[in-house]
Length: 573
Image (cartoon, rainbow, N blue to C red; front, side, top):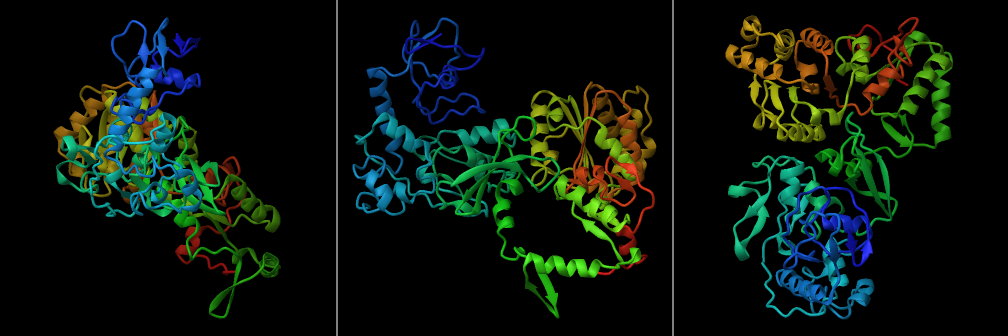
């Protein structure tokens, strides 16, 4: 196809707007987004296409071979100015069209045309605003239409982000992100005409509507309407680093924005293999506060009397080395966190084994791995994939509420449901997945394993017997039979187990069920746990009875359970 008389190539099925972007041709747009369906709300991306009547929208017109497109004619420029003026007539725009905006951006000396609360200089998205960029590109210097300031009260009623719908341009990105990508449909357009605005329908609060506070709406907002509270006035970051979220074992990729030597805010990274631009509320909003918490130890501390005092690293290392000299095997146990990196975990076990010659090392990760470490080594060797959830046509979710934890898994499950997959949840507690499930099997607490075992035994059987399991778990027999029949109809099964199931249920039956399911073809497992690197803790041998690679160690040493039951009493250094 040709764009502005230049021949360009493009992938099949993309829109004219996307084809232009891939070939570095600028077409203004405020409502389009690569992860969202075409909306055509802002009308800024009008183009001229040979053979087509009028001025089609580049964001909703599919590119075709032989198409000839013009994106920057005099007519288009004038029409875009008119459209943009209409948008700005309902948006605080004094700073956007001010002659002194360049100097004011540096010195903030001109506020006579705009109130402190409505000017661009006092907007959390100043210099990061897509509307500012489009106004600059189009060249708006005046607004010929009456300006209407809506006068809405700014919404501060949740702890993560503020909502100022006075500067909303109704692009619909947040609505489509919530509906199409997150699958929760919390946000919608409310009212019509001049009263139109965004929010949960029927007067509900965000909590009542089922909001997960994932921040996806904040990430796609082109203006300062949705602003993260923790970094609202930080401005542009000094830099961005890609890292891994430390809050659970999914391993979401994140972009860390830093400002003046501090972590300012966190955005999701567009890694298609893991989180694909999505995060949970903890990963999106909690990291800066956790990193810079006032009680976090920033230097080594030694206890003197009743209190700790800060010391240098040399002093701390000398103190530890002195206490370790001549330590007896019965007096020592190193306990490591499953949130550490692989390098730290390996170094810890090497220090204990090679340096002290004992196997007294353990991790709190063990508490969430019932059934033995050998079983979990086998489970971790099975196909585990976040993306595998989306490709499943039958899904079992056990003890999983993905609203505030493991949110990315919930997103993938909802995508699978959109594609026609069936979902059976096994959970005595209410969960967000109950809104979408085909069958909610609600056993008495602790009997999740009984139900999953019955499902595993009867999958694919025409005349299975679930009477005993239904009786023991307190589930209606007909519902259990119907759930088994529904799951049996699928070819690709995904089993997602939340940490609550391992903590509360009869672990023996749960493990037995997992082993039975592991023997079936086309089964994907997703065991979820709170430790960010529980798998690394297991495979790098930070439990006394196993070595790196899950090889069996000679002798076990003291374990954490020995201390908890009073069997061993190592000294606290």
